[in-house]
Image (tube, rainbow, N blue to C red; front, side, top):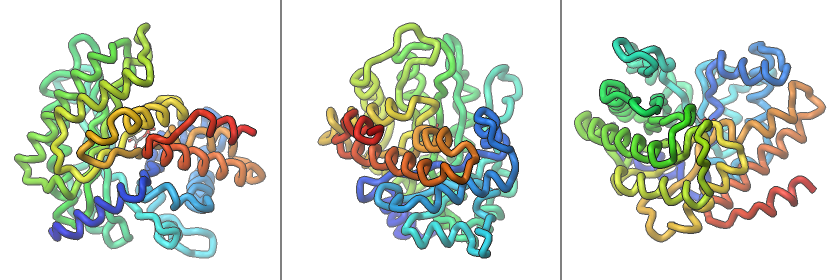
Length: 343
Ligand code: 13P
């Protein structure tokens, strides 16, 4: 492990008021998103779509890194150029999702454990050889009045810490993603309480596994009411609950925090990030940014629909969302930016 290299990469990923673009949907997840819009679920369509993202002019102004999936990191453009080369030529850092998905957790009905530790050291070495400089692992925590169990939290936190330690050994910055999911009728307060407990456990395990906090990035959920909760929260309430939770549970040594969007509408996710900066900028000990998949991509995907003649308009939509999120990172996002874009 070279600590300085890890720290430099981690800092670069959150510098310049930029954020990450997660385009690491597994084949089944990408196919689900395509199927919902009538886009063919083929490798060729997935490649064309990912090339559209990578080729979006100017995205590097707002995006520091792309999180790729195994299929994508191996793909080449028709002229033979590896996608990874196109990414690095655009000044963007390539990263790779390395977990193999959330599976049922034995003895804990309705709860998941993320797998992928077996053989991970070898897979990380291969990805480093392909040019990856950071990695991602997502744990999934479900909430209701009695979930999550301590067994689920501890198993996932332990796996995240083992993954993070292996990443740092390989010279990759680990993005540590414990996601408390939005499904269910739980309140904002319940989400914040569970998120805090999960983060405390994750940082305990990272400490036990000797993970260098300055060389990692945390990718948490925002504190949000469940999708089916009758009491939805204001933008300010979400910002306050999220920042309070993070200040309590995340050590200041961590290089950066980048949120997942978790199924929030794109503009709302941007507004939440903006409110955190507008209200708390001077009291945040870490850079706080975004690492969205759906909240960056979905508007573009809705326009593209697999039709080449829509590609340029889809790229403009992606560029616009990335720009809005950078503005949010500065606390300078205004809903008027959306009206201007809509014309
Ligand atoms: P969403 O922003 O769509 O939640 O995805 C982020 C991610 O990387 C999921 O692992």
